[in-house]
Image 1 (cartoon, helix red, strand yellow):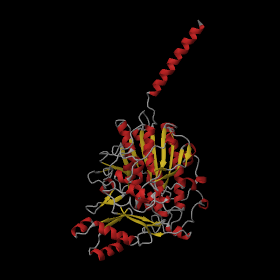
Image 2 (cartoon, one colour; image 1 turned 135 degrees about the vertical axis):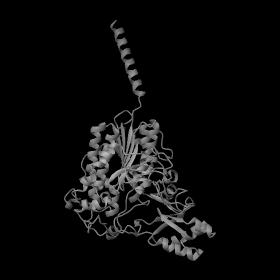
Image 3 (cartoon, rainbow, N blue to C red; image 1 turned 90 degrees about the vertical axis):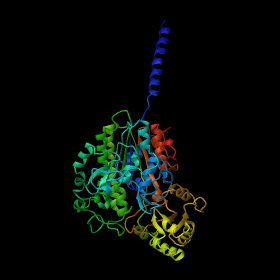
Image 4 (spheres, rainbow, N blue to C red; image 1 turned 60 degrees about the horizontal axis):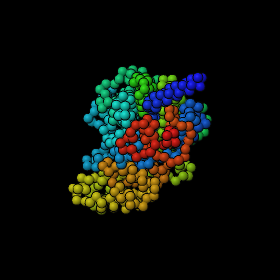
Length: 548
């Protein structure tokens, strides 16, 4: 009798267990919130260059609890902001997704096209048409944020925030809840009529705080005693640019508040631009009630001041080091906020970069590393040679994104063959000691160019929007406008080797030195969320990070 009772009890418990398991298996598990953090111009080595000075709750929390990919590269050229953000969120490349640069030249009209400019939409939150008339209309592929919206029948909330219009708009995709960027003419965050006809009340309240004024009120001094910035060159190095009304690139920047009042874009070059952006991210979570229900939301954040500071001062400056040390503290505060608001372990974060940055030419020269300026006077010189050869002036319409565009109208009107002009130009360019390769975009596959450069050119060339000749410079050759500070755009590791760390819900702990690409981020998040890959995706999920 007791035996029969025991068997019955075990059977009953087994049925309960099986039913509970079935119930669990029929419920789709996802994080409450996904947060994409793209740190503009962050070279991979910044994770470790300042490691000893980072606290435990910012970058080190990502490294010590998340999964770090140490060998991630950008698999196209040019390595610029609009492309980086687009590729991260589409899993695709310029050849497919349509964003060929921060801007490009329209081959038929010869006019410059900015990546997110859209005259058909109206500014919202400002009267400044130039600043506010933007949308993702030039983006051909869907983003992982689009796919999340589609997968949940538009119940997921998606927000993009950045100081830069393109770095908010392109990650947020075509169908977000909102995308917001900074207006230098007012000091407010704004949007366009592509998204809404009026700013949400929570954003109006955020703007009304005048937080930028508060952040710059006390100027900018180093977080630590300046003698501790041993990872950087001495203050007032000759290759650094000037901030605002400062006469020298030296701390403290006591005139910052007055400079901001006169020209509000000055905050972009300081660590306070990142602080402001993360505070807006927090306000977005609060205002849109993100992560509060059972439907996954997505917050796409670009931290742009790292890029502005890099361009202004160069990677080896105390200013850039201080921006990263302060960003580390801001990230710690932001993660703590998400812990309390969304729940620790309830959200997934990835941190990456849209591109890196080269060392300043002056810095490299001082340390006897081969460097120089690429393309100085190139357009004028080649145009003159083309005039001498073909009898027509200004056949080169533009040099943009390390690409040469020819004026098609002039060629047609003067019955000159594009192939003849292109071949002659390449012959002349190959005489330039700063040019490593000059190749016709139609003949890249047959060109004697080593990998991975060849494939990166192919991936970066958009048939309808890119130029006619792709230029590849020698290592550490910067464009002539970078007399101070630095820039980026090339295939070399200092521009293409980027950090990538996943942390939080569904993420394993560890690190890997296996090779991956920027385009692997979107399919990894898609796999984690069990949603369709973006429409133009060419990447693959990083299964070791998500344990699937």
